[in-house]
Image (cartoon, rainbow, N blue to C red; front, side, top):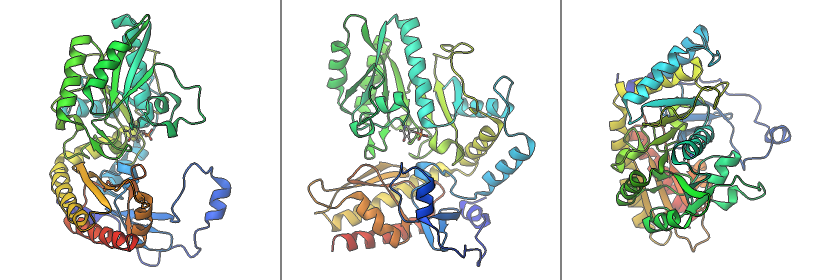
Length: 426
Ligand SMILES: *Cc1c(COP(=O)(O)O)cnc(C)c1O
């Protein structure tokens, strides 16, 4: 079945189904903690790459739940898998074997360098699992009393205490100290900084046990990793026994045009994590290991919901659809179309736009540092033009549509973005 047919089959909202009451944001804000600065928009339904707000207005969704809705909204394969799993069995404990979990793990192993998988519910939890595994590996295999994990400046690894500590951005850590000990930050794509850190941190009981890094920094501004840098990291880790851990939470599961971000870099990690796109929007996280599969013993790490039949059955359907429909080909073609279009726009606004970059369908448009205009300004005006976008830091507008986005939808988004930029630069 073609992507187009799949989208046409997806549920289109019947006309007249729009809520009669306008959405009451004040009541919402009185009930829900203000952890987000929300755009004045309440979304109600979706189909393919389009979503509708409570007023019935249609938007092209180039956010996809932040790089999450791999197959867009109301995709028939997901509707089928969700319905089947909820009718059959949705949750049991990991005290028992869960066939769907085994099948999903096998799919991941067949389609990556992984030898073993641990399931949880989110990206932060997957990274927590990787941090715990690295620490146990350090104590039991490398014989390090006080293991240190190196991470990169401008990285993003999640919002739990350990993962905000791993995240090399002070704005996420402010007010939450004391932070978890044992992390050290280096500039991204700078090999001499890593080498210096490894030798400086080798003192007393302290030693570097792992490097946790994104193949492409997502939240930090859509910055792809350098091939030479990552190959050198691999070499250093091979020589020292330091674990190389890739955070593939945002870039993995096909978003980059390859199934895993590391395929762009010509190196394989020892451990990698996935979440966002893995369940196509159903909460699931995973940590994969190559070689170091038996570090955890029963009882040493766990998750009540992790790997339940519902999440795994749906994620498996997402994975199989990605493969069966050859969606990675679409990601490459649409990504190139999008970057070409954004570059053409950038060429018209050289005083405002400094760079267009990305892999597959994770792309960023960077604004000049020394002007007032922010990514959020563009995102706000783009909403009026009917396109949803998300900033990646103050100066980068991020484009992460569903991987099934069509040629016509990319063209429509480009047109709307150009109008938005014309408006904000007037
Ligand atoms: C989003 C993200 C996380 C955190 O995932 P959650 O599911 O929000 O916990 C971790 N790492 C990267 C690279 C991410 O983009």
